[in-house]
Length: 330
Image (cartoon, rainbow, N blue to C red):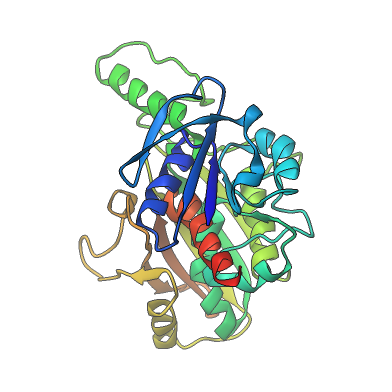
């Protein structure tokens, strides 16, 4: 079977290549597509050099499944054209909330793939790791409300933002002027409680994504409120999540459920260092759950800490897992 990656030279595109290299999917041909300035360059895949093609000249009919890792504006223009000739798995936010387009985390709602019409949307990175932890809990106890604060790595904003963190850190330590390019305030040695644009009600678009996408993926009746914060970490998103159930719960059963959550692993020793951090999750396919505890202010609620590599499970890995499910049915 033939595959293609649109946006092959970006952070997520390159991670998709790496994951496909290790995947059990049988790939006859892989087509790599990017902007005009990257066309003609080569990338190694399974010991073979693959020449990058220009998006404007690429024929979408060459691949059965095409990964889009190129942002919302590219997706808006090119995904509808591509979907006439190939199955598209799109990593941008553009199609996520469209009613007839599945928004999929395979461990949570793989059955939604049965309804696709050649376009499948990949959820927001922070939404993915959160719903992995929420799904089995919701199945058992029915979640009423979620309060989440995210601590999101700069890689979620692209390579230019990673470079800016590096430059700002270097300039700060050398007592040089710090220039702002991609961030609204200094990111080095700082936190910015602002990701994406502000809505009229004071929430940012990133926060609304977490609310709306969780409802679409898991349950429209779940109430979600989020605060999304950019932190000076290269890779790996972290989340502090308060989960309120409809009824009382058994705490030992909560631990058992989370220990068996697909795609997750519990690291929760109540001692120094007995928890996971984003640095430790970088490069790992697993989503980690730590700091599991009762909410002492609410007998129906618990608190958990969730970390995951935002470029892997939060983006590229999830799209490849979607493809793996599709391949089984083709």
